[in-house]
Length: 400
Image 1: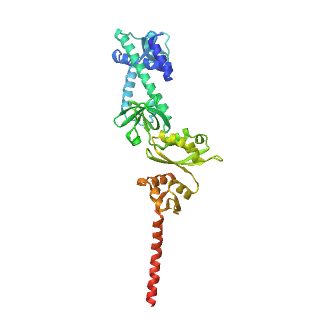
Image 2: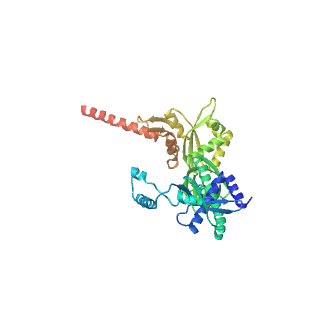
Image 3: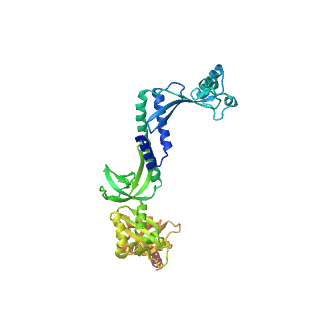
């Protein structure tokens, strides 16, 4: 078995291609090379390549058609050129359809065909063998090699694209390869993905060789091949880690209802029990916090609040503001805004540093939240009562 045959078979096995498809591509490339350097006008070049011997046979291939007078052939050719040059409508007219078109490149009239093959008839394929210059033999082997390499690259690109296109919007494991400027390259086994600066967790260090879970945000095609854009800031990574680390979530006893995340800093996860006698928060935290600590380590030290989901909106909002203790929740009639009352010593805790706690709670519940202290609520009540007292006092004075 020749080296070329081995190479073709190896491509076919590794890249799931048919042997005939690769061979056909090689023959097309060889035909183009012959046509360019040695072909003549009106030749329909076809090449038969034998990978065992690395030798080629070149033919001028034509289909036998009915005879046409020379004048008619010339008229048809000029008519054909005229029709092709005009920007005609999509539907050709009846007269154009009736025109008999003779193509000297791919067709051979019957009167000429019988000179080559006496028993030729209309519809036969006539293959005229062409001479192969010595220079073409060397060129053929080189062309075959280039086509095999090109086919290999194309097959790899197509395979990588289709494989990762199916994994788009999923979480996969990778290994940090290297950094190029602000972009981090991640080895995904069969391909290399890019982790742009805006998709990186602020303050997280990416050292070559570190294993990391990434979210496949987008898979596209570029002139250089498939481009796989990754993310470390996606909510999906948090959900995936919970799914992998907490058996109750993977088997459906506990469900993640909502996630609000500020990557690398803090997250809130709302969970609900779907099975009887299941503690959703306890399942996520684990014995002595073992499970939640594993998740926190996976996310680079990100703080995580586990919230129990409730169909009662007011109760859910109160729980979402944990660790702050809520006194009362008043829901707006339009169903978009809630006023949350807390004790004075809980006010800063409810709001959080730079408003982070209330911001995450609002995203988790889907409600706009106003946090008010108990003292502010009392002042407001006193202000409402005070004008009434002053009015009564004025009326008494007037009576006197």
